[in-house]
Length: 359
Image 1: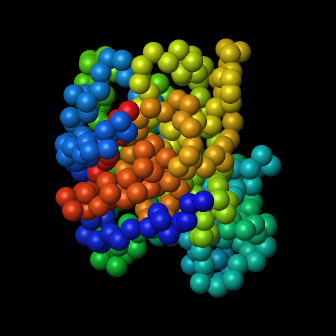
Image 2: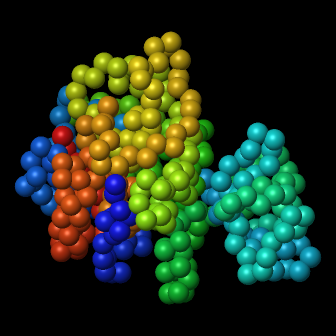
Image 3: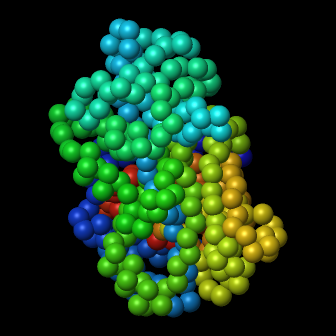
């Protein structure tokens, strides 16, 4: 039984990245090996084509990040409310997370604030409180258009808090570009957090990998806020794992079935998607559309994922447990790798540096 305290580690604040490297692939890359516990190489992400071969396949999560964060006021009192859009329910209501200085109640009417800080003509009516979320009725049906015009990039809270405390202002247009992978599929927008391992890729690096003969498969898993949430339970078994929607096209299913080389997942979300596939794989010639609440921790037997590209994750998170599951030695090995990264001053979290776990 894995205690969540075992996933904790001390991190100096100065190693928390507040903005990405420019260019993206100039970030550092720590290379480790599942087969060789002694391997620790300090490289640069643009070295990736030299580390992979024509028999390797990268699996990318092409989900696009929505401008899901929004500001609102109580229509009657002008009290400020901040929110995060999560999804549109089948009946048309939004599921959102809301934060207010005073208690919110069903029936409360909120007016959304535009990018100029002025009240818009769009409103949300609070319908029902769930555990950590609200169901709200929206005054218009075009939810994604509303978010595009009024929403903001759903940056992690630690970045938003640091900017506010430091009175640093960055235009949301720049944040939207930074917090989106170059290969994101706009037609499959649905994530409220970025699949951050993919943020290191550039168009030029993708071309270099293709020229090297590295093949590519895509999946789409919409990243929810629970992905990065620290675990509150004492043991990982007690943690109620969040559910996320994923989609795997038929050509990716066929590539996984053929298994002609090493499969390297780009990010924990890609790994979670392919590890959530049913056994045996669907062979009906259709895409696979489903949802998953799979919790991957040490002891998990990986069916498809041979290697992993990932970032350095928040303490006490399920993401750390997933990476530890990839490593012989589990959590102890992962913490030794993190100790090395801290000594060498790697940058951590969403905009930080990367790690490559090779088979």
